[in-house]
Length: 192
Ligand SMILES: C[S@@+](CC[C@H](N)C(=O)[O-])C[C@H]1O[C@@H](n2cnc3c(N)ncnc32)[C@H](O)[C@@H]1O
Image (cartoon, rainbow, N blue to C red; front, side, top):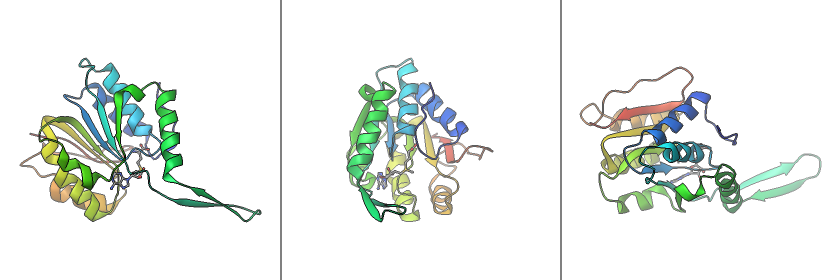
C-alpha cells in the first residue's frame, strides 16, 4: 500500500523509491526522513526484496523548530523536532516497517564518514538542500555506495541541488542520468 504521508514526493518519485528498495543490492542509506514518506517506501521495497535481510539506515537531526500562528487567536504553537520524530515513528508503525529502519538522530555531515566504503546498495539524499550541504553529502556518500549501487537525490526544483549533482555525479563514476517528466529526482544514477 502506497503511504499517504505528508511530504513533497510525486507519484513517480514514490514508484522510484519503492523499486529502489525492491532491487537494492545492499543496505540503504537515507538522508532526510521528515514524516517518513520516503522512509516507508524504501522500507516497503526492502521488505519485498529477495535479500530480505538488508536494513535501511536513515539520518535526520529532527531539530527543525517551526512556529505556527492560529489565525484570530493569536496563539503561537511551537512544533519542535521531537514532534516531527514522533509523527515519523507513528507512520513507520502504521505501515509496519519500523523493524526495517535504524534511525540516526544526527546531521549527515557528522555521521556519513563513520561508515565503511562500498557498503550501501542504495543511497537517497533528501536532507539539507543548500549547495554546500548537498555537495558535502554527495562527496561523503559516493564512496559509501557499492559498485552497481543506485544514487537518488531529491529534488530537481532546487537549483543548488542540481548544481551540486552536476559537479559530483560525473561520468567517470556513474552511468549517465536523465530527468523524467513527473519525477522530481535530481539524480537517478548507477555507480560504475
Ligand atoms: C525535504 S525533508 C525530507 C522529506 C522526506 N524524504 C519525505 O519523503 O518526506 C528534509 C529533511 O531533512 C532533514 N535534514 C535537514 N538537514 C539535514 C542534515 N544535515 N542531515 C540529515 N537530515 C537533514 C530535515 O530535518 C527534514 O526532516
